[in-house]
Length: 173
Image (cartoon, rainbow, N blue to C red):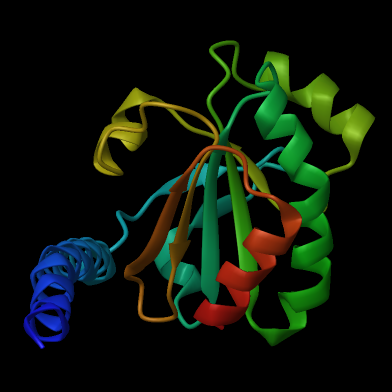
């Protein structure tokens, strides 16, 4: 009988640290998602290749994906076809994507890439000041999903696979 009584006690002692770790992880995840979701997206007004200004606050009411990228960045280039597919699929449901190129040569670097690759969503040129407004974009690609109210709903650093990107967009729509 002693062995029978001690087995549940040992299991209970072993389970407590596991439960504490799980609870701590949930608190951290919730705190991070709450902090990100509460932040309003910094506005920008940048000219596209066609000379028209794209201003974030004028896209209010839509889910806007703000994607920082560059033509020289292999992961950035690899995620673009998947983003275009998702954009084409959900544009009518209120999705907008703005690609913010961070190439140092500006349009001189970006124009040839766009001519060759025919990206279906708007592209603008960003700068250091804009990346700082978005919390310091330290790596590219970095993607922000802005909800219909203008708040940052999600942030992803690194290449997004099409399936993951679509899931994030559907969740925001």
